[in-house]
Image (cartoon, rainbow, N blue to C red; front, side, top):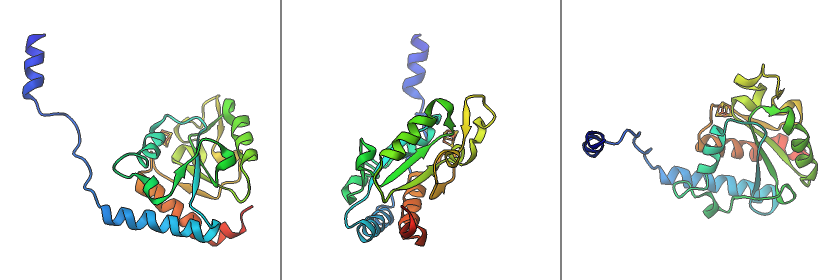
Length: 176
Ligand code: SF4
Protein backbone atom coordinates (compact mmCIF):
# COMPACT_ATOMS: atom_id res chain seq x y z
CA UNK A 1 0.00 0.00 0.00
CA UNK A 2 2.78 2.39 0.96
CA UNK A 3 4.62 1.48 -2.27
CA UNK A 4 1.51 2.19 -4.34
CA UNK A 5 1.02 5.52 -2.63
CA UNK A 6 4.64 6.46 -3.27
CA UNK A 7 4.36 5.48 -6.94
CA UNK A 8 1.23 7.54 -7.41
CA UNK A 9 3.05 10.58 -6.04
CA UNK A 10 5.87 10.18 -8.58
CA UNK A 11 3.89 9.17 -11.67
CA UNK A 12 2.50 11.74 -14.04
CA UNK A 13 -1.30 11.72 -14.30
CA UNK A 14 -2.65 9.34 -16.95
CA UNK A 15 -4.94 11.85 -18.57
CA UNK A 16 -5.06 13.32 -22.04
CA UNK A 17 -3.96 16.92 -22.44
CA UNK A 18 -6.81 19.41 -22.58
CA UNK A 19 -7.81 20.51 -26.09
CA UNK A 20 -6.32 23.75 -27.28
CA UNK A 21 -8.88 26.45 -26.67
CA UNK A 22 -9.91 28.17 -29.88
CA UNK A 23 -12.04 30.74 -28.13
CA UNK A 24 -12.49 32.97 -31.17
CA UNK A 25 -13.72 30.12 -33.41
CA UNK A 26 -16.07 28.86 -30.71
CA UNK A 27 -17.48 32.32 -30.08
CA UNK A 28 -17.99 32.84 -33.80
CA UNK A 29 -19.76 29.51 -34.22
CA UNK A 30 -22.01 29.92 -31.18
CA UNK A 31 -22.75 33.50 -32.21
CA UNK A 32 -23.79 32.29 -35.67
CA UNK A 33 -26.14 29.71 -34.12
CA UNK A 34 -27.69 32.41 -31.94
CA UNK A 35 -28.10 34.88 -34.83
CA UNK A 36 -29.64 32.16 -37.03
CA UNK A 37 -32.06 31.26 -34.21
CA UNK A 38 -33.07 34.90 -33.77
CA UNK A 39 -33.72 35.21 -37.51
CA UNK A 40 -35.86 32.05 -37.48
CA UNK A 41 -37.58 32.40 -34.14
CA UNK A 42 -37.14 36.02 -33.09
CA UNK A 43 -35.30 34.87 -29.98
CA UNK A 44 -32.52 32.54 -28.87
CA UNK A 45 -32.68 28.77 -29.16
CA UNK A 46 -34.14 26.47 -26.48
CA UNK A 47 -33.03 22.84 -26.53
CA UNK A 48 -34.52 19.84 -24.75
CA UNK A 49 -32.18 16.86 -24.54
CA UNK A 50 -33.70 13.38 -24.51
CA UNK A 51 -31.79 10.21 -23.74
CA UNK A 52 -33.82 7.57 -25.55
CA UNK A 53 -31.47 4.76 -24.54
CA UNK A 54 -27.87 5.87 -25.07
CA UNK A 55 -24.76 4.62 -23.24
CA UNK A 56 -24.37 8.22 -21.93
CA UNK A 57 -21.31 8.89 -24.06
CA UNK A 58 -23.31 11.29 -26.21
CA UNK A 59 -24.70 12.94 -23.05
CA UNK A 60 -21.19 13.68 -21.80
CA UNK A 61 -20.46 15.62 -24.98
CA UNK A 62 -23.80 17.42 -24.87
CA UNK A 63 -23.27 18.33 -21.20
CA UNK A 64 -19.87 19.70 -22.18
CA UNK A 65 -21.65 22.46 -24.09
CA UNK A 66 -22.66 23.86 -20.70
CA UNK A 67 -19.34 23.50 -18.93
CA UNK A 68 -16.95 26.35 -18.28
CA UNK A 69 -14.96 25.58 -21.44
CA UNK A 70 -17.84 25.95 -23.94
CA UNK A 71 -20.28 27.83 -21.68
CA UNK A 72 -23.00 27.97 -24.30
CA UNK A 73 -25.43 29.96 -22.18
CA UNK A 74 -23.31 33.07 -22.57
CA UNK A 75 -24.51 33.10 -26.21
CA UNK A 76 -28.13 32.77 -25.16
CA UNK A 77 -28.53 29.13 -26.22
CA UNK A 78 -30.31 27.31 -23.42
CA UNK A 79 -31.10 23.76 -22.40
CA UNK A 80 -34.61 23.66 -20.96
CA UNK A 81 -36.24 21.24 -18.55
CA UNK A 82 -39.54 20.86 -20.37
CA UNK A 83 -40.37 20.05 -23.99
CA UNK A 84 -43.09 22.71 -23.74
CA UNK A 85 -40.33 25.33 -23.71
CA UNK A 86 -38.20 23.76 -26.45
CA UNK A 87 -37.57 24.48 -30.12
CA UNK A 88 -35.19 21.59 -30.72
CA UNK A 89 -35.32 18.05 -29.37
CA UNK A 90 -31.80 16.68 -29.19
CA UNK A 91 -32.27 12.91 -29.06
CA UNK A 92 -29.48 10.45 -28.27
CA UNK A 93 -29.11 6.71 -28.38
CA UNK A 94 -30.97 3.95 -30.04
CA UNK A 95 -34.62 4.25 -29.05
CA UNK A 96 -35.31 1.49 -26.58
CA UNK A 97 -38.72 -0.12 -26.54
CA UNK A 98 -39.20 1.23 -23.01
CA UNK A 99 -38.50 4.80 -24.14
CA UNK A 100 -40.48 4.78 -27.38
CA UNK A 101 -43.73 6.05 -25.88
CA UNK A 102 -41.96 8.63 -23.69
CA UNK A 103 -40.14 9.95 -26.74
CA UNK A 104 -43.36 10.21 -28.71
CA UNK A 105 -45.09 12.00 -25.82
CA UNK A 106 -42.20 14.42 -25.50
CA UNK A 107 -42.46 15.22 -29.20
CA UNK A 108 -46.23 15.71 -28.94
CA UNK A 109 -45.72 18.10 -26.00
CA UNK A 110 -43.28 20.29 -27.93
CA UNK A 111 -44.92 23.30 -29.59
CA UNK A 112 -44.43 23.98 -33.31
CA UNK A 113 -42.20 24.97 -34.95
CA UNK A 114 -40.07 22.13 -33.61
CA UNK A 115 -37.12 20.23 -34.95
CA UNK A 116 -35.70 16.86 -34.08
CA UNK A 117 -31.96 16.32 -34.13
CA UNK A 118 -30.71 12.76 -33.78
CA UNK A 119 -27.31 12.76 -32.06
CA UNK A 120 -24.73 9.99 -32.44
CA UNK A 121 -24.38 6.87 -34.54
CA UNK A 122 -26.84 4.93 -32.40
CA UNK A 123 -29.52 7.55 -33.03
CA UNK A 124 -29.19 6.96 -36.77
CA UNK A 125 -30.03 3.28 -36.91
CA UNK A 126 -29.54 1.77 -33.46
CA UNK A 127 -25.78 1.49 -33.95
CA UNK A 128 -24.11 -1.26 -31.98
CA UNK A 129 -27.38 -1.91 -30.12
CA UNK A 130 -29.47 -2.36 -33.27
CA UNK A 131 -29.82 -6.10 -32.86
CA UNK A 132 -30.78 -5.98 -29.21
CA UNK A 133 -34.22 -7.30 -28.29
CA UNK A 134 -34.73 -4.04 -26.37
CA UNK A 135 -34.02 -1.73 -29.32
CA UNK A 136 -36.81 -0.16 -31.37
CA UNK A 137 -34.32 1.31 -33.88
CA UNK A 138 -32.98 4.76 -34.63
CA UNK A 139 -34.83 7.95 -33.78
CA UNK A 140 -36.40 8.09 -37.24
CA UNK A 141 -38.23 4.86 -36.43
CA UNK A 142 -40.33 6.91 -34.00
CA UNK A 143 -40.11 10.61 -34.96
CA UNK A 144 -39.52 12.68 -38.09
CA UNK A 145 -35.84 13.58 -37.92
CA UNK A 146 -34.70 16.92 -39.36
CA UNK A 147 -30.98 16.38 -38.90
CA UNK A 148 -28.60 13.64 -37.86
CA UNK A 149 -25.25 14.49 -36.29
CA UNK A 150 -22.99 11.46 -36.62
CA UNK A 151 -20.16 10.33 -34.38
CA UNK A 152 -19.62 8.04 -31.45
CA UNK A 153 -20.00 10.37 -29.73
CA UNK A 154 -20.02 13.63 -31.73
CA UNK A 155 -17.85 16.36 -30.22
CA UNK A 156 -19.41 19.56 -28.86
CA UNK A 157 -18.20 21.60 -31.82
CA UNK A 158 -19.83 19.10 -34.19
CA UNK A 159 -23.07 19.55 -32.24
CA UNK A 160 -22.86 23.31 -32.65
CA UNK A 161 -22.13 22.99 -36.37
CA UNK A 162 -25.13 20.69 -36.70
CA UNK A 163 -27.43 23.17 -34.95
CA UNK A 164 -26.18 25.93 -37.22
CA UNK A 165 -26.77 23.80 -40.32
CA UNK A 166 -30.25 23.00 -39.07
CA UNK A 167 -31.19 26.63 -38.57
CA UNK A 168 -29.70 27.71 -41.87
CA UNK A 169 -31.17 24.95 -43.98
CA UNK A 170 -34.09 25.69 -46.24
CA UNK A 171 -35.82 22.63 -44.86
CA UNK A 172 -36.13 24.32 -41.48
CA UNK A 173 -38.47 26.90 -42.92
CA UNK A 174 -40.77 24.09 -44.01
CA UNK A 175 -40.78 22.19 -40.71
CA UNK A 176 -43.90 22.22 -38.59
S1 SF4 B 1 -23.22 6.88 -30.48
FE1 SF4 B 1 -21.57 6.02 -29.20
S2 SF4 B 1 -21.48 7.38 -27.41
FE2 SF4 B 1 -23.47 7.75 -28.41
S3 SF4 B 1 -24.91 6.34 -27.38
FE3 SF4 B 1 -24.09 5.25 -29.18
S4 SF4 B 1 -22.35 4.05 -28.36
FE4 SF4 B 1 -22.83 5.65 -26.86
